[in-house]
Amino acid sequence: MTTLPTESRPLEAAGRRGSPRRLVSALWLFVILCYLYCDVLGFYYEPHLRELLAGQVGSIAVTQGFLLGSAVLMTIPMAMTLVSRVAPHSVARWATVGAAGFMTIVQAASLLVGSNTLHYLYFSVIEIATTGFLAYYAAFRWRGDRSGEG
Image 1 (cartoon, helix red, strand yellow):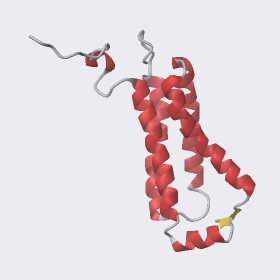
Image 2 (cartoon, rainbow, N blue to C red; image 1 turned 135 degrees about the vertical axis):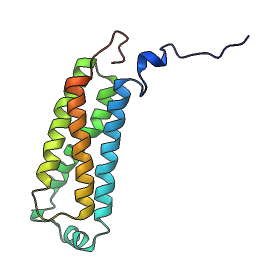
Image 3 (cartoon, one colour; image 1 turned 180 degrees about the vertical axis):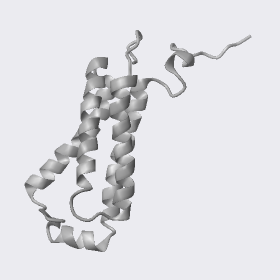
């Protein structure tokens, strides 16, 4: 009888969702897409588009410094997709706790600035829940394992 090849690591050992590293990396990708699509939808809202074309976001001037700060801020979750997959377990775990905690605070604080559209509130709830879960999961649930996958 012919048997099909199996993975070197049985599915039972990896859990139903795969390794914790895959889950964490996938959640970082998910939240990045939420950040991105929320911003893209903002371009379709005429009052926001007018503000952007005038060089303003609420009461904040869109300067080179503002754009650089925004780029650095969004680099954090982008980098975490890689860090969560390739860094040693303790580095990936605690970097996730720190980055997710920081991004949760930043997103929650953004709700206190200016007026918010319904789509922004919708995505903010998802983003805060996702990064909050990432911080919780990494701090309290993501334990290393002997295979190095943890």
